[in-house]
Length: 288
Ligand SMILES: NC(=O)c1ccc[n+]([C@@H]2O[C@H](COP(=O)([O-])OP(=O)(O)OC[C@H]3O[C@@H](n4cnc5c(N)ncnc54)[C@H](OP(=O)(O)O)[C@@H]3O)[C@@H](O)[C@H]2O)c1
Image 1 (cartoon, rainbow, N blue to C red):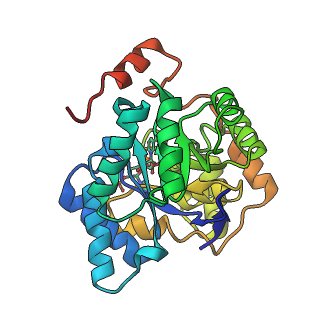
Image 2: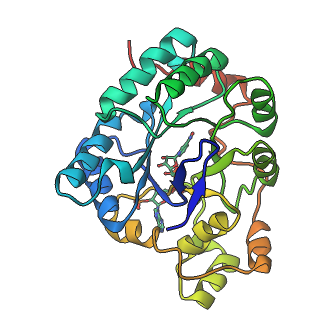
Image 3: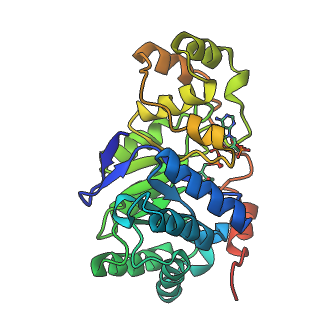
């Protein structure tokens, strides 16, 4: 496993496991437990995924069986939009800590740049200084939003988690994050089920050359750009496949060739520049 170093000095694994769209508690718990057995140490959830408790349960089972210690793991969760103001964020942070069931969270993100996210950030900065959140970061921040944010806040985000795969290359976002020492984490690193690595002639021929799968080539493409990947799967063989990325290396030319798949836009459902989308996330309530 390769690790990157956050602006806090903490090491973060470059390959993690995401649990978006696994609302069923038993399936989520089992997938997390299996992922730990395979070797994953970084886990990514969010308050809005409603499975922070199931992620915690899968981890606890592995700890109780002596497979791993809490200190070896890196747990990420995210504050939902409903809790984005100073007072609500303080409660949202406590709720995430309680649901996960550990004393601290390794990385906590503002899920979206919506409502009073500057107020929420102040609450996160306080929890960071108290040691409840070991690192704090952001998600879905477009380059100009990240720039404004980094030029304004006291604690610079450790991470910006954004959609990033060969069909949405986001070179500008990577460049702007690097400028502020913010590490980029790729969500939907396999294309999020909307694109299939298997359907690209460019990717399949490179995969054949290295004796790897198209999914592994796509994940490797991001790793070599200095990006963290957090693929999701509930199938053990894919969980294993998505972790087995360190026995081959793409050439610079191959990285460039894969990048030609860029469509220049991401998930057409996730449009923070669309007023209807903004209204939709603001009205998406996850608690009373
Ligand atoms: N910050 C945000 O706003 C945000 C948004 C979206 C996602 N995320 C995070 O990023 C993580 C990953 O994103 P994602 O789940 O949207 O997309 P993804 O990891 O790119 O793709 C997941 C899809 O690919 C399939 N898959 C997994 N491994 C495969 C393989 N080796 N070969 C072929 N297909 C494979 C999965 O199916 P099976 O499960 O059936 O194997 C699932 O349908 C999420 O779990 C979440 O933690 C964050």
